[in-house]
Length: 164
Image (cartoon, rainbow, N blue to C red; front, top):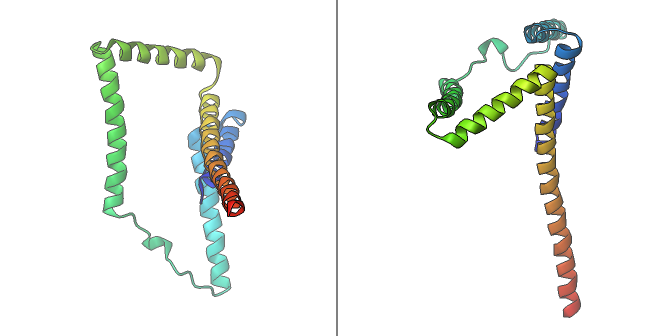
């Protein structure tokens, strides 16, 4: 799936989460439980349908496993992210880097003021929309550059043929 497909999938998923949490006034835990209930029921219905139609499933879902390397990689990335954030906050809190301290205080104050004005779900959804928009812009720029290069190449080829 290309970058545009990822951005659109992320935007659609984010919109559904935003609707569930903001307009239905439901919690994120409620959303996860609803999703798991729908997935479980769908898999059960598909299993019964496959059994009735005598369709063999090539992969048994009970045998799906995550490798030890993948699990270690996921935990290592999470630990690195948390460690980096903790390191930045520790340096800012000690006051050794005055610019970093001021940046952290301004960001926290801005987020605090924004949190009083708008719900957290709305802020998260707006951030998701901006992220998807940036992904779409990067994709469209790379497509635009490709089209421009192709167009310029065709023009250059036409000029070279006309010179000879």
